[in-house]
Image (cartoon, rainbow over all chains, first blue to last red):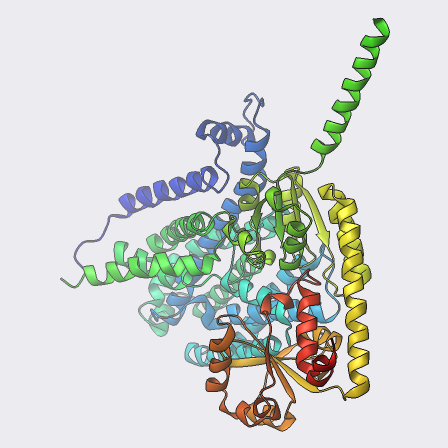
Length: 345
Length: 292
């Protein structure tokens, strides 16, 4: 690694990037609005006294469609990246991602249960259907993670290696259960399931947004406070304990925050791969492994990446839309490879 | 003179009123759902369509319209960017939050049932007729549809008097590979019944079958719907990918019938009666040979 970016520069850069992404996400879409109208609509949404004449369409598009979508993108991207850092810190393994403790597979299982089971019961009413789906995904993620954590504990100690293997086993188990649901599903349910597995920020509404915003704000405020402890954990568990860190408590917190954050993100937007695995690496390649920088910077980078991916998702095939899971990997993977290979010369 | 002015005013008012009712009908349509878009076109509304979903493949000309994506995954802004006045679709259309957003933007959203039966179709056609200002045509179209299906029923009963209903399997696949077998409760099952076939598959939904099970059922007629290929190519691909099928009675007797897979989505469409005639002819070769 040749040169690292100074934390200050990194934060300013990522902050500007995130602001740019937010603005573009509010300003661009299949409906073309004059830039001035977008600006005025945003100002009005912020509560500033701007004349409302001729702004009806802009206010509707920006306020009811783009703003909830942007907030959803920010929260999901941030929390996925943050959980990725937490998991890579916990397992001290660069290949770790939030899926490792079973959140994603558990959420997928919950979602499959809701989609296929719901349609088998004659279809859930439209009014509650989406909430049942989100709730089942969230509970599924939390449940499987709790089980993985429980399996990793012996004599009051959490064995990270056992937990990792238990995570793999339970992921496989949930995978086969999802497969069974897929087999039982009819054509229409199958399509819903497939699309859910690719994730989407489409159809974001405030009602479904608030729980996620609360959870992700909580996680984003809490995890950075544990940055020093995570740094100590990089040295090894006993070393961290000798440095006065309550390692058991740290592990518990990391797993709990990940389960909560990723569970809420997946429940709101479906499965969005890649962000949790690669954003922490991107930031580490730029700024080094210090968690005091890594944690907050990952939030900004994850949120920006997801918003840019969503822009592509909604504009590439307009008026139709691509599932965002396809785009995150498509944008992120080549960029990641570039950063990786750049350091080799 | 004064009277004249009044008469003129009345005439003008009447004309304006008439103009207003015609203008009240939605003029920019987005339609999601294969069969529904076909009906809109059949009722003369094709020129009003400004966008369709990916399942709307017929008539051919619809494919040139902007696509709003798959009917279950519509994007609110995408649909709104076409500035539609009305969005029509089957109950499968969604997701619900997006429909709510589209509604709140002042677009009329109309949902139609996709249940494959005549009362539903009658209701749907009547509703579409009203929305398109073509009620008479809609009624006429339904009557003729009704008549065609009734004739179809008679044809099947006639044929069954002379010949036992054949055992049929309907395979849906893409380029012949790993076909799914249509079971109970699918639109394909309904289609086979209407055409007078006996569906040998007893599971529900579309499921993959092992080659052994396929051979064991030994269908007298095979119907296949291929999403990627058509005609002789599709037939060749089916037998190349699934050699075991060649040993069935259907293959030996050459009773392998092709079906357009788009007929299987989105309820009863206008092309259905013709396909039923074709299927019945394949199921009962003796009867149709004797028919005038």
